[in-house]
Image (cartoon, rainbow, N blue to C red):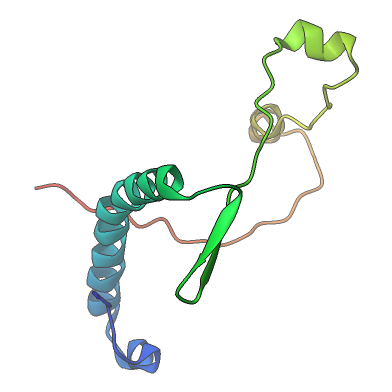
Length: 115
């Protein structure tokens, strides 16, 4: 099994450059593994009998979810549409100088520079 670091405490001593490399390795690994994991889950689902099974130390349960086949107008008619704040409009208004209460939250955006 692939791991990025054996002891997570190791990252505390890494340089910023090493942390960026480790972050990108993790991102690349997830991109590669996510489709594989989905394919494995789909095949496993086909092999499970009934509603579920216990396999080794894992309880595998088949669950059902409803996939609604209604358009927005029908959903409105049924009272199933929520009103939400449009943050894009608020951002545009704020950039035009309109005073809107807000707070600033810091976060990282990490992208690889393609050479």
